[in-house]
Length: 203
Image (cartoon, one colour):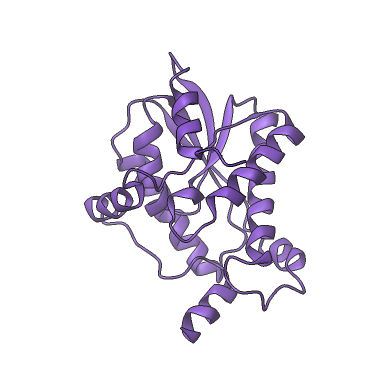
């Protein structure tokens, strides 16, 4: 698909005349800041905090704490809540076995995207949300085409509407940095898994 995911998102949002229910997978508070501020007038948002890739557990808990603080403090037009999932790092490690040495943006990351979006779509289906989405496309370091393709696959698998996105567009990433400063958010210096820490040290 060669269409603009940003444009597809705008077209979908134009159809919404009253708040819908959105299950939004969030990787962290800083990335979610822009996405929440962008989508709050269209949706009652529930954050799904499901990030089994994050290591160590102390880092996972620190990011989760910041996520909860942000949704309590951020300016919003409609409801916002959070579903706090269990820390499932053992499952992540099992799924990426054999791919530990893949570079960032390689097959290990694809497996990680699949794991988190599968969980999001499944919960969205079970709890009868209108849409599901992820904050991951706000990052300039993430492959938005791949993420949207996976999201569409999960839409077909679980029969719940995927909201296309490329939240980095129109200075979305820059806005996330500004909001992070406004709310004093902790901004981590690695994606999440211990392999991304290792690669960062090799730079």
